[in-house]
Image 1 (cartoon, rainbow, N blue to C red):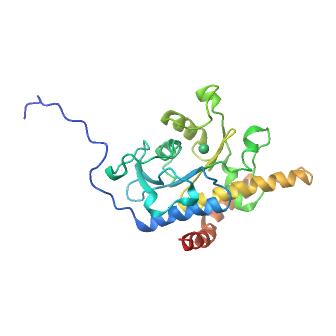
Image 2 (tube, helix red, strand yellow; image 1 turned 180 degrees about the horizontal axis):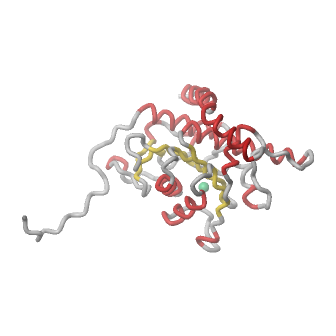
Image 3 (cartoon, helix red, strand yellow; image 1 turned 90 degrees about the vertical axis):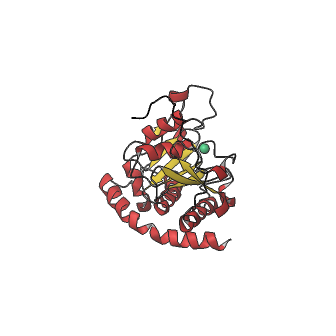
Length: 258
Ligand code: MN
């Protein structure tokens, strides 16, 4: 047995070598960013990530720029503590709310993509008693539950409502829970998850559309005939497959823009 007199150096957090990211997955993420910006779900803020299929303890996300501007060279690899893992990415500006993503991936192994946005028509449902509920068949996933995260309960009064620490990311992931696809964030927006990037993009879009339609329905007279829970669950299953069609269109259009 060797003498244990030499203390072990702490493991380097970053690997010195450069990782080669899967080009198709990078293009998917670029397309997702541009698409949700074009569809009005993301504005100059918000972000999308996808879990690395080669290592579930890592995810891909853009450096901190407006989603509409994202190109392949902007995509970074992060660990689940939401720190970069490649030395070439050291010093790059990262999204301040990236902990939303890493902390959700830690507790939801079924989730492979996350969209955080300030989805404009969703925000009124975060500050009123009105509950966002599925009325459109594409939005059946809302039947899995739509929890509301109240940051004052976790960080007190006086925050800027943003998820700026790992602990707040953990709290948000806990509020999302084991089943929901969407967690609302009071006065801020939402975070939407899916088993795949196309499905998470689909869900983020139809969360916004369902919110618009729910508001429209209220203006022409309620009560609204919402989907039943059984319908919502059946529809969610169907849309997990159907989301491939709009995704193919969105991806092609987004990448054609260059
Ligand atoms: Mn935000």
